[in-house]
Amino acid sequence: MNELVDSTTKKLAEKDENLKDMMLAMKKEMEELNGELMIYKVALSNRMLFLRPKQQAMDVPKSKKFKGARFARDIDNFFWEIEVCRE
Image (tube, rainbow, N blue to C red; front, top):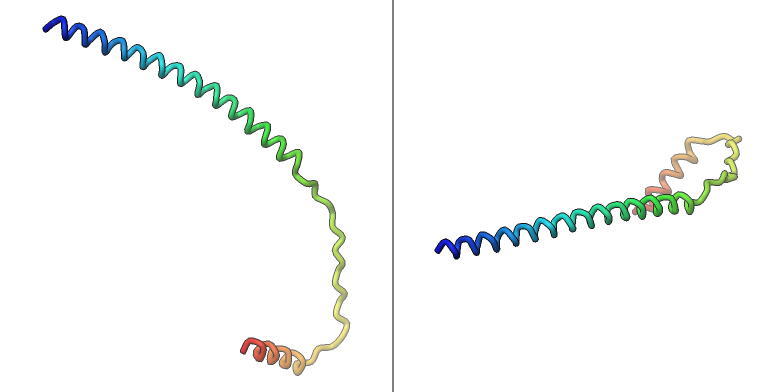
């Protein structure tokens, strides 16, 4: 019975060591991949900054000032036309 317990204990200890080694290898690979990812992010960010279109000044014509008179009747007619169009 002791031999069976000793054998099982040794097998479990070996599996434990194998799992620890695998975990360390995976952690190392994850660190390398995170480093590569950071490099790609920086490169992509720099490329986006480089490709961003430069802002240009736009020449927009300015509206002319109103130089006339307005009558309340014209404004009322305007609002009446809006109400008729809605119906």
